[in-house]
Image (tube, rainbow, N blue to C red; front, side):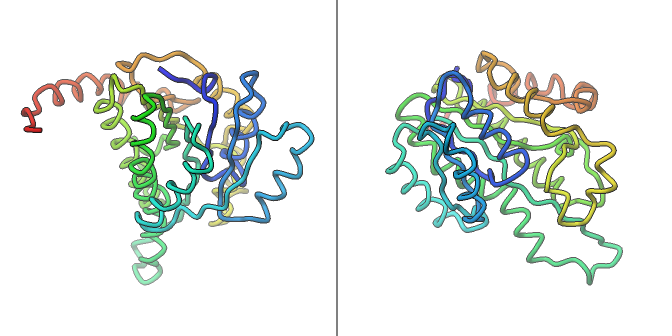
Length: 272
């Protein structure tokens, strides 16, 4: 199955800062010399990253302004344009994310529109993006999909219920698609981080409180790249569990793939 070291053209969605930017630049530095496309909403920031890395990128670093918080038809149109410009695209990393505290003991403070935006950015837009990309990956019988979820997909932190629910949904969706797509050449590796140094926490002003406990971004990036470079059979669990999330995963999630496979084996035959 494909891994990050065999990928020739990689799109990183949400690459203007934090985890996405760190992974994009590390992928760019691989000996395999892939083309890397960074995307995000902030054009000025994309231009800045391009300029900062122009001397070492060898023309392999590209940027696209993409706002993933849109509806499915808009995402489909974006993917269509993307594949015209980059027909060799064979890997995508979904690093965009929003995390907001929602205090339901004071319902009037909860912005429903902001909640739906969080859900779309973290889950439904990613699903729409994968759906739009799959015909291309299936036709070339080669594709690597890397959704970045969270340890909070397994057990929620009650003060960020929207974030936890969206990551749990993406985790479940990724496992389901990995089972469906076995034997097609399209593989999923779900990165499941612990608390990581990131601008994600700036929105709610929690950076100061969390910085004493988070994993440094450089350490997370190194561990993630090591995992993404490994050969995986398409019958293996898709989760790439990082850091202290491993204990949580072992207790609450390990072994579930066998049950998922059993359920899939009992699916009634579908008339074509």
